[in-house]
Length: 522
Image 1 (cartoon, rainbow, N blue to C red):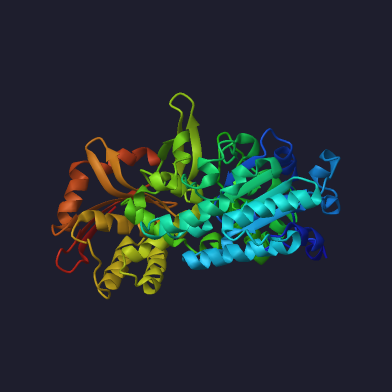
Image 2: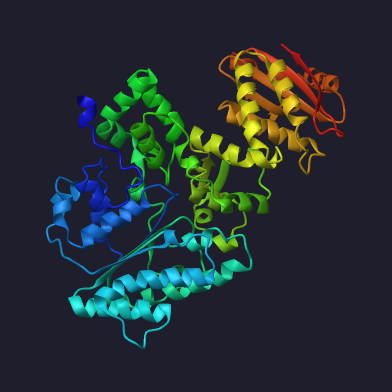
């Protein structure tokens, strides 16, 4: 009976009105909306990763500014707002304009303008997109007698997939710049402007011309405006966690820790509450299964392309990267490193801040992101035969979980012998990264180039009960790899870990591009 009374999780429901009227579970973010609506600025920009609740937030703003007081009954804003003025709202959703060319983009913008023009009309002289936007804002204000609210969701969506293309990016960027340009000229007619996105494109008019736009992406008062905090989860979702625990045959505490390891760990400023990925958490609770939901919804092609462009190795993603506050705000076209894009896209997050140096420490937020990212990068190291590769990795995990590294390496050797070798396999680093990806997919701690008093260990992996010290060679000898481990006493570096150390020497053949021989010593 208790399970039937639980509110449904709003999977894929991004309209505030539908969430409330459909009696879905809603995490109350209306206090933030009141704060923005009555803040010093009338122009706001918020950056958050995809599927982090931006669209629901924009829809909530729409209902609020449309004066739909009845939808906010029982929510925080009901006690804060006293006027509930109805404003004309122009709501644009740019998420519909992904993977498009110039003509398609202009057509989609035309359709969205037309929907509003059906209400407020369109002068014959307004032909271009920016003229139509300008006259639309002015007419809405004149006809209603109230200033206009403009909401633009995922303003950068048309540009993300072409950010690595020198030809297409300037073309589409010019279309979007013209579309947004009236926002400055129409300032007297505007009550509130709010834009969401992932990245910052400096040459768009909203950033180059609207110098009064308030970017609240890293402002502490708005740290939890999107996503679900641990406090919110425990307060509003305890019944759902109990049901999930029953499905998993675990205790509620074990289930909570599992959810934390899998979906928690985001911080968009420092200090910040722990924030869970809302898409993944809600899916897990609704489906009563812990899985990689955020990554399962699609890996952006732009991310993989930009990782290649900046020559970022898998082991370099996260791994205690550091950045200054200004780096997070770096214009996308002028990025000198992959760090801003990885952060804005949600693949790394803030883990610490040093007031003295003003440096933020960044790392991968949680296990879902680590495993999902490595799965996306795996094709680059297995020549795209990833279906069988994942199966092999699963079997390797089973072997290592039983303490049988010998069987795990034999499985990898058998698999590599069946696929054409990849490019760039003539250096040890390729195999080091392959091992890093595989061990990361196990969900175990793994690191490369680990410093010791006498040198660096190629790969270190730690399971629940064993620590593996692995030295790799290419075109040499596995015994030589083992000799190096012993000569430089690599295991001594990890004596305080409290775990037994297993030494592994592996040699890859320069001719076959496969494991030639290995030695395992306990």
